[in-house]
Length: 98
Image (cartoon, rainbow, N blue to C red):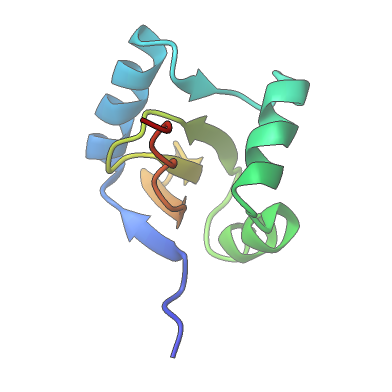
């Protein structure tokens, strides 16, 4: 049985992770259309499904991608008003060839 790529995460820890990603240039916002679309495609995120699923649970969702290669790497949908967050987990990036 496959495990779902969607999980809820601690909102306050998520906000700290987003700040670190922003500081390190590892945050991708939907306004960065080319970079956003490429990341979503390469990581096989089912964005429409995920937005629909999160939208059924939270109001006024926002989206962000953390592309840091660590445990926070993923596509996130969150609600500031509800202080709630969901993550679409992706595999770690492949290591460069030696």
